[in-house]
Image (cartoon, rainbow, N blue to C red):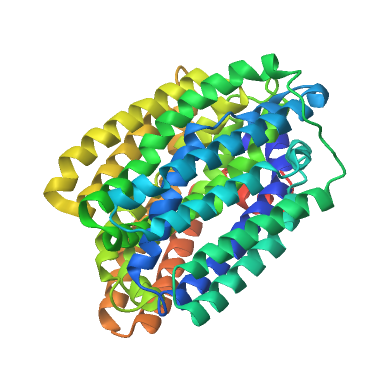
Length: 485
């Protein structure tokens, strides 16, 4: 039986949460695009680059100190005795991370030959403390699949943070505007967590033994993710300077939009549902949701690659054209990551942390080797090629392990994918002639998007009708947005 006919309860429970989280990510990304569109005309690529490098170091330490506390609380059958310890561990972790950021500020400034990094790192240390001091009770919303409350927690701080970014840039014309927006957003979100949730956790480490095994495996996985995710940006910045780092960061941000704005919110919503019923969550439940997501993410990544040039010209103006080749490569790789990401979420829900560690470590090792080989030869484009190849490897491993021993699932996967794949191919043929015929970036972008959407929707619908209207991803997509399954 195809994935679309299995375990409808999982999709039904996650549908509302997916809509809230996906909707929020689109709104948040829209605010971010608006902000960057303004800031790119006021600030310089090096201003974005210095923030990207500082954030990259902070995210590296975030992975380095990751304990998996939230995931453990969501997966726990009775977390009542764990909340205080979870909060204390989160706060202690934040203090360690802030101390490390401050300690690394001056060495990082010397390494990248830019003393502005000292200010950026100090601000990021303050932000880490604010994150750690947030009310851990908000994790309870995820357990209950009340992700609408999670969205409400983030909305106002995000909106105000963007306003501070834009106003600060227009007044200061400096990277300090980005720093101020980040701090304001985190401070408001921390305050909102205590205002919106009644839980008042205390300082305690009484249940540390229950969380320690999970924390160990999560920490090891985080180390592998640290190498996998932060290596490209840091190497590009170290070898080519902050300007190149800014270009590569912009390319990565745009290329990852289908993943960050669709896949990650959906996996965030599906994970609690899978974790709540691991015994009854059939092995193909994750595959069904992934098939639904692939209808959007597969053409999304390919579409971004097709309209990369007018998108960059319109969104960021002159001086950013160097991001186009890397953007195209990364977007194409990201378009195929749907099933791999959902496969890893399936492993996480079942507590198979060793499997996640093995897959992530293999991908990280491959990425390092490929970066070392390709960056000296091809620069930023080589870095994009290395990232793309390691993404394909990781997704292949995740899918292979998740479907191991289930030939019916492999057949079902092929039966689900051929229609969106065919429709995406039709879109790829329809868009380039439209772009070639229009010179101005805005009309070209709008016409390209319209042509791509029309071609994709038409071929997908015709293929579905020709297949006999199967109960598959297409109907699951409609069910998802009706909140039923």
